[in-house]
Image (tube, rainbow, N blue to C red; front, side, top):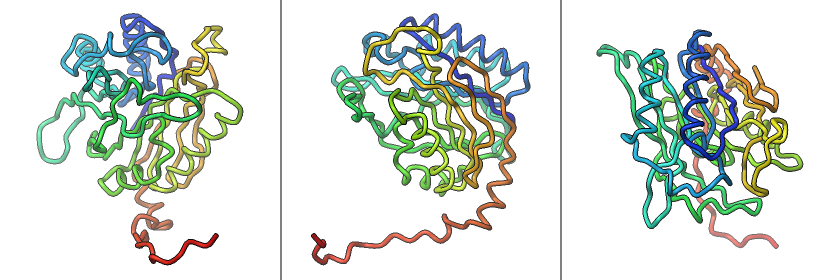
Length: 284
């Protein structure tokens, strides 16, 4: 399966960002991509304005326009947007839309659904939960018979989500992000991607926003606006491909059967055990 990471830098205007999506979908399709993955907050960048004023449901005009591009070019598009939540907050949603192929014995299907980010980025001085409502369910979609797990940014720090996705059938996992900049943050991004791939013995395709500093764009201090370095990690934890810091289309080929072979050699999913605390005193 050929997958493309559209490492773009989005801004305030959802329509400008939609144009970037269309252009990237066309370019990725021309290179034979089956899935095109965009960063978190593609609809509007963090720190670029209120999220509740642009949030739309999955049948709204923004998501519908993405779906039209997916159908036109015959690819599955995975893209970060914002949908309405409760109490004035929004949901940080990963839209999955386009042809998904035959799931096994039936007709080809079109997908149009969303995964809502479970783990909110209340860290490094940023409080995503002030404006965003968390999701409560993991999600695996089937594309051409292959299980593809979904995750967003801060989710990558929580191993249990990735092992749950693998247990539910994922052999490829996607993580769309708008990673916060700072000392050591790119190294953390790489380390976490490699660790989650090993935890789940899946291919992990981690796709981030481009670094605005490299692009010469001023952003709101403190907002997680991207560092680039989208990467594909194999189920053995090795980095197979990595983008630079700026805007880039990274196209990779993934042989999902490799995950099956590595799970025979490193059977962490099969060997895992859940143990209960002993109830004894904690040493001090």
